[in-house]
Image 1 (cartoon, helix red, strand yellow):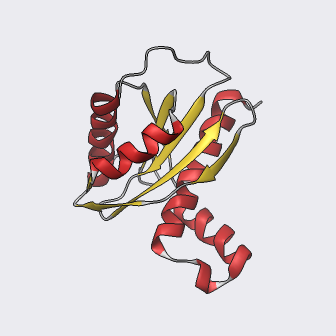
Image 2 (cartoon, one colour):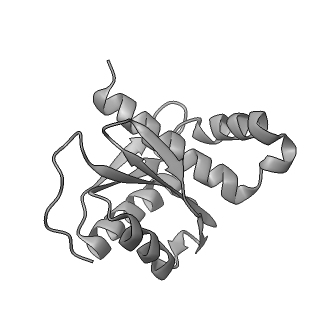
Length: 149
């Protein structure tokens, strides 16, 4: 998919990804509202997703920008999965010719589990749900960092 007419900053549709080696959470959001909603997580094998599954989401939602969560250590240093997430971000850009940015995702999994638990207890803590909620939080954090006060 090649998309040439991107919307101006502040009006873009943004797709967020919570990269993982077994599952990749996906969310979609709007800069205008600063809100995000979860989509369907895709399975990955050692961090390599089924690109056809991602293409379905990209083609349906037509994002103007993609944001990949960057897993860092609490002190801000990189870890092994940080480099895999950056590689995934580069591959997204190469596959879809859509701008890709990264966003610090420290503590998003803990936050996602807390939100999901509040919504439905332990039964709501399935892996795909946690990954998708993490993707939502990554996007919300991106919007807040980009446009918040």
